[in-house]
Length: 439
Image (cartoon, rainbow, N blue to C red; front, side, top):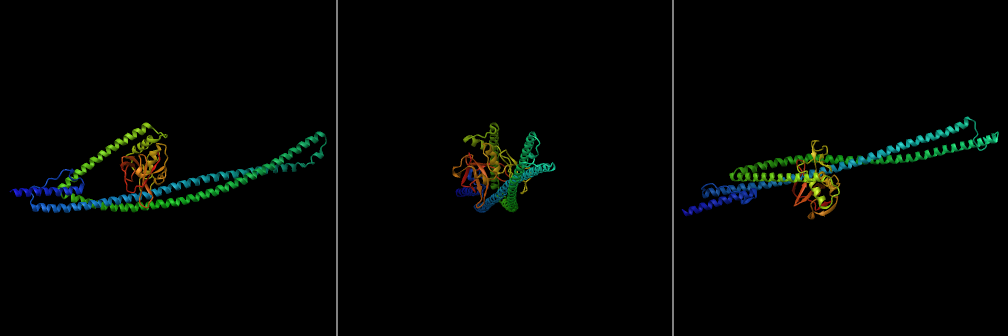
Protein backbone atom coordinates (compact mmCIF):
# COMPACT_ATOMS: atom_id res chain seq x y z
CA UNK A 1 0.00 0.00 0.00
CA UNK A 2 2.77 2.42 0.90
CA UNK A 3 4.70 1.41 -2.22
CA UNK A 4 1.65 2.11 -4.36
CA UNK A 5 1.19 5.51 -2.71
CA UNK A 6 4.83 6.44 -3.34
CA UNK A 7 4.50 5.40 -6.98
CA UNK A 8 1.36 7.48 -7.33
CA UNK A 9 3.05 10.56 -5.84
CA UNK A 10 6.06 10.13 -8.10
CA UNK A 11 3.76 9.68 -11.10
CA UNK A 12 1.95 12.92 -10.29
CA UNK A 13 5.26 14.77 -9.92
CA UNK A 14 6.42 13.42 -13.27
CA UNK A 15 3.25 14.65 -14.98
CA UNK A 16 3.57 18.10 -13.40
CA UNK A 17 7.19 18.41 -14.57
CA UNK A 18 6.20 17.32 -18.07
CA UNK A 19 3.51 19.97 -18.26
CA UNK A 20 5.89 22.63 -16.97
CA UNK A 21 8.37 21.75 -19.73
CA UNK A 22 5.67 22.38 -22.35
CA UNK A 23 4.65 25.65 -20.72
CA UNK A 24 8.25 26.81 -20.56
CA UNK A 25 8.87 25.99 -24.25
CA UNK A 26 5.74 27.82 -25.35
CA UNK A 27 5.81 30.98 -23.26
CA UNK A 28 9.25 31.25 -21.72
CA UNK A 29 7.67 32.09 -18.38
CA UNK A 30 8.39 28.73 -16.68
CA UNK A 31 6.86 28.38 -13.25
CA UNK A 32 5.93 32.04 -12.99
CA UNK A 33 2.41 31.16 -14.18
CA UNK A 34 -0.11 28.80 -12.58
CA UNK A 35 0.41 25.07 -13.16
CA UNK A 36 -2.33 23.01 -14.85
CA UNK A 37 -3.97 20.46 -12.59
CA UNK A 38 -2.80 16.87 -13.31
CA UNK A 39 -5.34 14.21 -14.32
CA UNK A 40 -6.63 12.21 -11.36
CA UNK A 41 -5.05 8.83 -10.41
CA UNK A 42 -3.03 8.15 -13.56
CA UNK A 43 -1.39 4.75 -13.95
CA UNK A 44 2.28 4.35 -14.80
CA UNK A 45 1.33 3.47 -18.38
CA UNK A 46 -0.92 6.55 -18.65
CA UNK A 47 1.86 8.77 -17.37
CA UNK A 48 4.35 7.31 -19.82
CA UNK A 49 2.03 7.80 -22.81
CA UNK A 50 1.16 11.33 -21.62
CA UNK A 51 4.81 12.25 -21.28
CA UNK A 52 5.57 11.00 -24.77
CA UNK A 53 2.63 12.90 -26.27
CA UNK A 54 3.52 16.12 -24.43
CA UNK A 55 7.18 15.84 -25.44
CA UNK A 56 6.21 15.35 -29.08
CA UNK A 57 3.78 18.31 -28.96
CA UNK A 58 6.38 20.48 -27.20
CA UNK A 59 8.85 19.74 -30.01
CA UNK A 60 6.25 20.79 -32.60
CA UNK A 61 5.56 24.02 -30.69
CA UNK A 62 9.27 24.84 -30.50
CA UNK A 63 9.77 24.18 -34.23
CA UNK A 64 6.73 26.24 -35.24
CA UNK A 65 7.73 29.10 -32.93
CA UNK A 66 11.19 29.17 -34.53
CA UNK A 67 9.59 29.19 -38.00
CA UNK A 68 7.42 32.15 -37.03
CA UNK A 69 10.47 34.05 -35.80
CA UNK A 70 12.23 33.43 -39.12
CA UNK A 71 9.20 34.68 -41.06
CA UNK A 72 9.01 37.80 -38.86
CA UNK A 73 12.67 38.52 -39.59
CA UNK A 74 12.07 38.03 -43.32
CA UNK A 75 9.12 40.45 -43.19
CA UNK A 76 11.32 43.08 -41.49
CA UNK A 77 13.98 42.65 -44.19
CA UNK A 78 11.42 43.11 -46.95
CA UNK A 79 10.03 46.25 -45.31
CA UNK A 80 13.55 47.67 -44.96
CA UNK A 81 14.38 46.95 -48.62
CA UNK A 82 11.20 48.70 -49.75
CA UNK A 83 11.96 51.69 -47.51
CA UNK A 84 15.42 52.00 -49.12
CA UNK A 85 13.86 52.00 -52.62
CA UNK A 86 11.39 54.68 -51.59
CA UNK A 87 14.13 56.85 -50.09
CA UNK A 88 16.06 56.62 -53.39
CA UNK A 89 12.97 57.67 -55.34
CA UNK A 90 12.30 60.60 -52.99
CA UNK A 91 15.93 61.78 -53.25
CA UNK A 92 15.68 61.67 -57.06
CA UNK A 93 12.45 63.72 -56.96
CA UNK A 94 14.21 66.33 -54.82
CA UNK A 95 17.05 66.52 -57.39
CA UNK A 96 14.49 66.86 -60.20
CA UNK A 97 12.72 69.76 -58.49
CA UNK A 98 16.06 71.55 -57.91
CA UNK A 99 16.99 71.11 -61.59
CA UNK A 100 13.58 72.42 -62.71
CA UNK A 101 13.94 75.45 -60.45
CA UNK A 102 17.37 76.18 -61.95
CA UNK A 103 16.00 75.84 -65.48
CA UNK A 104 13.10 78.19 -64.71
CA UNK A 105 15.47 80.79 -63.25
CA UNK A 106 17.72 80.55 -66.34
CA UNK A 107 14.71 81.02 -68.62
CA UNK A 108 13.71 84.14 -66.69
CA UNK A 109 17.23 85.55 -67.13
CA UNK A 110 17.13 84.73 -70.85
CA UNK A 111 13.76 86.47 -71.21
CA UNK A 112 15.11 89.54 -69.39
CA UNK A 113 18.13 89.60 -71.73
CA UNK A 114 15.81 89.32 -74.77
CA UNK A 115 13.81 92.31 -73.55
CA UNK A 116 17.04 94.29 -73.09
CA UNK A 117 18.08 93.38 -76.65
CA UNK A 118 14.73 94.58 -77.99
CA UNK A 119 15.09 97.84 -76.06
CA UNK A 120 18.61 98.32 -77.45
CA UNK A 121 17.34 97.74 -81.01
CA UNK A 122 14.62 100.35 -80.51
CA UNK A 123 17.24 102.81 -79.19
CA UNK A 124 19.38 102.26 -82.32
CA UNK A 125 16.41 102.84 -84.59
CA UNK A 126 15.51 106.02 -82.72
CA UNK A 127 19.09 107.33 -82.86
CA UNK A 128 19.40 106.54 -86.57
CA UNK A 129 16.05 108.25 -87.26
CA UNK A 130 17.20 111.35 -85.37
CA UNK A 131 20.42 111.52 -87.36
CA UNK A 132 18.56 111.01 -90.65
CA UNK A 133 16.15 113.78 -89.68
CA UNK A 134 19.03 116.22 -89.10
CA UNK A 135 20.67 115.32 -92.42
CA UNK A 136 17.34 115.55 -94.31
CA UNK A 137 16.51 118.91 -92.80
CA UNK A 138 19.89 120.30 -93.78
CA UNK A 139 19.52 118.97 -97.32
CA UNK A 140 15.94 120.15 -97.86
CA UNK A 141 16.69 123.65 -96.61
CA UNK A 142 19.71 123.88 -98.86
CA UNK A 143 21.97 124.83 -96.00
CA UNK A 144 25.70 124.52 -96.18
CA UNK A 145 26.53 123.72 -92.55
CA UNK A 146 30.22 123.38 -93.22
CA UNK A 147 32.83 125.60 -91.53
CA UNK A 148 32.33 128.44 -94.08
CA UNK A 149 28.98 127.75 -95.73
CA UNK A 150 26.72 129.91 -93.64
CA UNK A 151 29.32 132.41 -92.51
CA UNK A 152 30.33 133.56 -96.03
CA UNK A 153 26.76 134.60 -96.77
CA UNK A 154 26.46 136.89 -93.75
CA UNK A 155 25.15 140.41 -94.54
CA UNK A 156 26.02 142.18 -91.28
CA UNK A 157 27.94 141.59 -88.04
CA UNK A 158 24.70 140.65 -86.30
CA UNK A 159 23.82 138.22 -89.07
CA UNK A 160 27.35 136.77 -88.88
CA UNK A 161 27.00 136.20 -85.11
CA UNK A 162 23.60 134.56 -85.57
CA UNK A 163 24.94 132.37 -88.37
CA UNK A 164 27.94 131.36 -86.19
CA UNK A 165 25.62 130.34 -83.31
CA UNK A 166 23.41 128.35 -85.67
CA UNK A 167 26.43 126.61 -87.21
CA UNK A 168 27.61 125.63 -83.72
CA UNK A 169 24.15 124.35 -82.79
CA UNK A 170 23.93 122.21 -85.97
CA UNK A 171 27.36 120.75 -85.30
CA UNK A 172 26.49 119.90 -81.68
CA UNK A 173 23.19 118.32 -82.70
CA UNK A 174 24.89 116.15 -85.32
CA UNK A 175 27.59 115.13 -82.82
CA UNK A 176 24.98 114.21 -80.17
CA UNK A 177 23.06 112.18 -82.74
CA UNK A 178 26.23 110.29 -83.74
CA UNK A 179 27.15 109.67 -80.11
CA UNK A 180 23.63 108.44 -79.31
CA UNK A 181 23.77 106.06 -82.26
CA UNK A 182 27.13 104.66 -81.13
CA UNK A 183 25.93 104.22 -77.53
CA UNK A 184 22.83 102.43 -78.77
CA UNK A 185 24.99 100.14 -80.90
CA UNK A 186 27.25 99.33 -77.92
CA UNK A 187 24.22 98.68 -75.69
CA UNK A 188 22.75 96.34 -78.30
CA UNK A 189 26.03 94.44 -78.62
CA UNK A 190 26.18 94.00 -74.85
CA UNK A 191 22.52 92.95 -74.70
CA UNK A 192 23.05 90.48 -77.55
CA UNK A 193 25.99 88.96 -75.68
CA UNK A 194 24.04 88.71 -72.42
CA UNK A 195 21.08 87.18 -74.25
CA UNK A 196 23.25 84.52 -75.90
CA UNK A 197 24.86 83.68 -72.53
CA UNK A 198 21.47 83.50 -70.81
CA UNK A 199 20.07 81.28 -73.56
CA UNK A 200 23.09 78.98 -73.31
CA UNK A 201 22.62 78.83 -69.52
CA UNK A 202 18.91 78.12 -69.91
CA UNK A 203 19.61 75.36 -72.44
CA UNK A 204 22.18 73.79 -70.09
CA UNK A 205 19.75 74.02 -67.16
CA UNK A 206 16.96 72.47 -69.24
CA UNK A 207 19.28 69.63 -70.24
CA UNK A 208 20.12 69.15 -66.56
CA UNK A 209 16.43 69.08 -65.68
CA UNK A 210 15.75 66.51 -68.39
CA UNK A 211 18.59 64.35 -67.08
CA UNK A 212 17.30 64.72 -63.52
CA UNK A 213 13.79 63.80 -64.69
CA UNK A 214 15.13 60.67 -66.35
CA UNK A 215 16.90 59.70 -63.13
CA UNK A 216 13.78 60.42 -61.07
CA UNK A 217 11.56 58.47 -63.48
CA UNK A 218 13.94 55.50 -63.31
CA UNK A 219 14.08 55.70 -59.50
CA UNK A 220 10.30 55.88 -59.14
CA UNK A 221 9.83 53.05 -61.65
CA UNK A 222 12.35 50.95 -59.74
CA UNK A 223 10.60 51.73 -56.47
CA UNK A 224 7.24 50.81 -57.99
CA UNK A 225 8.61 47.53 -59.30
CA UNK A 226 10.21 46.85 -55.93
CA UNK A 227 6.92 47.66 -54.18
CA UNK A 228 5.06 45.17 -56.37
CA UNK A 229 7.72 42.51 -55.89
CA UNK A 230 7.84 43.12 -52.14
CA UNK A 231 4.05 43.02 -51.94
CA UNK A 232 4.06 39.61 -53.61
CA UNK A 233 6.77 38.33 -51.28
CA UNK A 234 5.01 39.75 -48.24
CA UNK A 235 1.79 38.07 -49.35
CA UNK A 236 3.62 34.76 -49.60
CA UNK A 237 5.22 35.29 -46.18
CA UNK A 238 1.84 36.23 -44.71
CA UNK A 239 0.29 33.06 -46.14
CA UNK A 240 3.13 30.96 -44.69
CA UNK A 241 2.77 32.69 -41.36
CA UNK A 242 -0.98 32.08 -41.33
CA UNK A 243 -0.41 28.40 -42.03
CA UNK A 244 2.18 28.11 -39.28
CA UNK A 245 -0.08 30.02 -36.90
CA UNK A 246 -2.92 27.60 -37.61
CA UNK A 247 -0.61 24.69 -36.82
CA UNK A 248 0.55 26.39 -33.64
CA UNK A 249 -3.04 27.08 -32.60
CA UNK A 250 -3.93 23.46 -33.24
CA UNK A 251 -0.99 22.24 -31.15
CA UNK A 252 -1.94 24.57 -28.31
CA UNK A 253 -5.62 23.65 -28.46
CA UNK A 254 -4.81 19.92 -28.26
CA UNK A 255 -3.96 20.24 -24.59
CA UNK A 256 -6.24 22.08 -22.19
CA UNK A 257 -3.32 23.15 -20.01
CA UNK A 258 -1.47 24.73 -22.93
CA UNK A 259 -4.63 26.48 -24.06
CA UNK A 260 -5.22 27.94 -20.62
CA UNK A 261 -1.60 29.04 -20.41
CA UNK A 262 -1.84 30.73 -23.80
CA UNK A 263 -5.00 32.56 -22.72
CA UNK A 264 -3.26 33.81 -19.61
CA UNK A 265 -0.34 34.95 -21.72
CA UNK A 266 -2.70 36.73 -24.14
CA UNK A 267 -4.41 38.46 -21.22
CA UNK A 268 -1.05 39.54 -19.85
CA UNK A 269 0.06 40.74 -23.29
CA UNK A 270 -3.18 42.69 -23.71
CA UNK A 271 -2.76 44.29 -20.28
CA UNK A 272 0.81 45.20 -21.13
CA UNK A 273 -0.31 46.74 -24.43
CA UNK A 274 -3.06 48.74 -22.68
CA UNK A 275 -0.64 49.95 -20.03
CA UNK A 276 1.92 50.86 -22.69
CA UNK A 277 -0.73 52.72 -24.71
CA UNK A 278 -1.84 54.53 -21.56
CA UNK A 279 1.73 55.54 -20.74
CA UNK A 280 2.25 56.72 -24.30
CA UNK A 281 -0.93 58.81 -24.18
CA UNK A 282 0.22 60.40 -20.94
CA UNK A 283 3.70 61.07 -22.35
CA UNK A 284 2.24 62.40 -25.61
CA UNK A 285 -0.22 64.72 -23.86
CA UNK A 286 2.44 65.99 -21.46
CA UNK A 287 4.86 66.65 -24.32
CA UNK A 288 2.14 68.38 -26.37
CA UNK A 289 1.21 70.55 -23.38
CA UNK A 290 4.84 71.64 -22.91
CA UNK A 291 5.18 72.40 -26.62
CA UNK A 292 1.98 74.47 -26.56
CA UNK A 293 3.05 76.46 -23.47
CA UNK A 294 6.57 77.16 -24.68
CA UNK A 295 5.53 78.24 -28.16
CA UNK A 296 8.06 78.31 -30.99
CA UNK A 297 11.42 79.26 -29.48
CA UNK A 298 14.34 79.07 -31.90
CA UNK A 299 17.17 80.25 -29.65
CA UNK A 300 17.21 77.30 -27.25
CA UNK A 301 20.52 75.68 -26.38
CA UNK A 302 21.74 72.71 -24.41
CA UNK A 303 19.30 70.70 -22.35
CA UNK A 304 16.37 73.00 -23.11
CA UNK A 305 16.82 72.47 -26.85
CA UNK A 306 17.07 68.70 -26.37
CA UNK A 307 13.91 68.69 -24.24
CA UNK A 308 12.11 70.73 -26.89
CA UNK A 309 12.92 68.44 -29.85
CA UNK A 310 12.05 65.32 -27.84
CA UNK A 311 8.75 66.90 -26.73
CA UNK A 312 7.84 67.81 -30.30
CA UNK A 313 8.53 64.28 -31.52
CA UNK A 314 6.69 62.71 -28.56
CA UNK A 315 3.70 65.01 -29.09
CA UNK A 316 3.08 63.23 -32.40
CA UNK A 317 2.76 59.71 -30.92
CA UNK A 318 -0.10 57.93 -32.68
CA UNK A 319 0.07 60.00 -35.89
CA UNK A 320 0.03 57.64 -38.88
CA UNK A 321 3.02 56.94 -41.11
CA UNK A 322 2.74 58.51 -44.58
CA UNK A 323 5.61 58.15 -47.06
CA UNK A 324 6.94 61.61 -47.93
CA UNK A 325 4.74 63.20 -45.25
CA UNK A 326 5.70 65.81 -42.67
CA UNK A 327 7.92 68.89 -42.54
CA UNK A 328 9.02 71.57 -40.07
CA UNK A 329 5.43 72.74 -39.60
CA UNK A 330 3.89 69.35 -38.81
CA UNK A 331 2.27 66.35 -40.52
CA UNK A 332 1.32 66.69 -44.18
CA UNK A 333 0.16 64.68 -47.16
CA UNK A 334 2.75 62.40 -48.70
CA UNK A 335 4.10 62.00 -52.21
CA UNK A 336 1.28 61.31 -54.73
CA UNK A 337 1.31 58.16 -55.11
CA UNK A 338 3.45 55.62 -56.86
CA UNK A 339 2.69 53.03 -54.18
CA UNK A 340 -1.08 53.03 -53.98
CA UNK A 341 -1.62 55.16 -50.86
CA UNK A 342 -4.66 57.50 -50.81
CA UNK A 343 -3.84 61.10 -51.66
CA UNK A 344 -5.71 62.49 -48.62
CA UNK A 345 -3.59 60.72 -45.98
CA UNK A 346 -1.78 63.09 -43.60
CA UNK A 347 1.11 62.06 -41.38
CA UNK A 348 4.89 61.67 -41.11
CA UNK A 349 7.58 59.50 -42.56
CA UNK A 350 10.79 58.99 -40.60
CA UNK A 351 12.68 62.00 -41.96
CA UNK A 352 9.59 64.26 -41.89
CA UNK A 353 9.19 63.58 -38.15
CA UNK A 354 12.83 64.60 -37.58
CA UNK A 355 12.33 67.83 -39.55
CA UNK A 356 9.33 68.72 -37.39
CA UNK A 357 11.03 67.86 -34.08
CA UNK A 358 14.27 69.76 -34.70
CA UNK A 359 12.62 72.82 -36.27
CA UNK A 360 11.31 73.58 -32.78
CA UNK A 361 14.89 74.37 -31.75
CA UNK A 362 15.66 76.34 -34.91
CA UNK A 363 17.45 73.46 -36.66
CA UNK A 364 16.66 72.99 -40.35
CA UNK A 365 17.27 69.46 -41.61
CA UNK A 366 17.39 68.05 -45.17
CA UNK A 367 14.34 66.09 -46.31
CA UNK A 368 15.80 62.59 -46.83
CA UNK A 369 17.20 60.39 -44.04
CA UNK A 370 20.46 59.63 -45.86
CA UNK A 371 21.06 63.39 -46.16
CA UNK A 372 20.11 63.97 -42.51
CA UNK A 373 22.92 61.56 -41.57
CA UNK A 374 25.41 64.18 -42.77
CA UNK A 375 23.88 66.96 -40.64
CA UNK A 376 25.65 67.83 -37.41
CA UNK A 377 28.47 66.01 -35.63
CA UNK A 378 29.11 62.26 -36.01
CA UNK A 379 29.31 60.46 -32.65
CA UNK A 380 29.77 56.75 -31.90
CA UNK A 381 26.42 55.13 -31.29
CA UNK A 382 27.87 53.77 -28.05
CA UNK A 383 28.03 57.41 -26.85
CA UNK A 384 24.57 58.39 -28.09
CA UNK A 385 22.70 60.97 -26.01
CA UNK A 386 19.03 61.99 -25.88
CA UNK A 387 18.24 64.18 -28.88
CA UNK A 388 20.72 62.43 -31.21
CA UNK A 389 19.55 60.94 -34.52
CA UNK A 390 20.27 57.25 -35.14
CA UNK A 391 20.16 55.61 -38.56
CA UNK A 392 19.51 52.21 -40.13
CA UNK A 393 20.51 50.53 -43.38
CA UNK A 394 20.61 47.09 -44.92
CA UNK A 395 23.99 45.63 -45.77
CA UNK A 396 25.20 47.08 -49.06
CA UNK A 397 22.20 49.42 -49.37
CA UNK A 398 21.77 53.17 -48.66
CA UNK A 399 20.42 54.51 -45.37
CA UNK A 400 16.65 53.99 -45.32
CA UNK A 401 15.50 54.99 -41.81
CA UNK A 402 16.13 57.57 -39.08
CA UNK A 403 14.88 57.76 -35.49
CA UNK A 404 15.59 59.92 -32.43
CA UNK A 405 17.20 58.48 -29.30
CA UNK A 406 15.32 59.73 -26.20
CA UNK A 407 17.23 57.96 -23.40
CA UNK A 408 16.72 54.81 -21.32
CA UNK A 409 17.51 52.68 -24.36
CA UNK A 410 14.45 53.99 -26.25
CA UNK A 411 13.83 55.86 -29.46
CA UNK A 412 10.89 57.65 -31.09
CA UNK A 413 10.21 56.98 -34.77
CA UNK A 414 7.73 56.97 -37.64
CA UNK A 415 8.25 53.29 -38.54
CA UNK A 416 6.64 52.18 -41.82
CA UNK A 417 3.42 52.16 -43.84
CA UNK A 418 0.60 50.88 -41.65
CA UNK A 419 2.31 52.00 -38.44
CA UNK A 420 2.09 55.11 -36.28
CA UNK A 421 4.63 57.34 -34.56
CA UNK A 422 5.74 55.35 -31.52
CA UNK A 423 8.33 54.89 -28.78
CA UNK A 424 10.20 51.55 -28.85
CA UNK A 425 13.44 50.09 -27.51
CA UNK A 426 16.37 51.07 -29.72
CA UNK A 427 16.88 48.32 -32.31
CA UNK A 428 20.40 47.11 -33.04
CA UNK A 429 19.75 45.25 -36.27
CA UNK A 430 20.93 47.41 -39.19
CA UNK A 431 21.95 50.22 -36.77
CA UNK A 432 24.79 52.40 -38.10
CA UNK A 433 27.82 52.70 -35.81
CA UNK A 434 27.56 56.52 -35.78
CA UNK A 435 24.75 58.87 -34.83
CA UNK A 436 24.23 62.52 -35.85
CA UNK A 437 24.26 65.17 -33.12
CA UNK A 438 22.86 68.59 -34.10
CA UNK A 439 22.25 70.04 -30.62
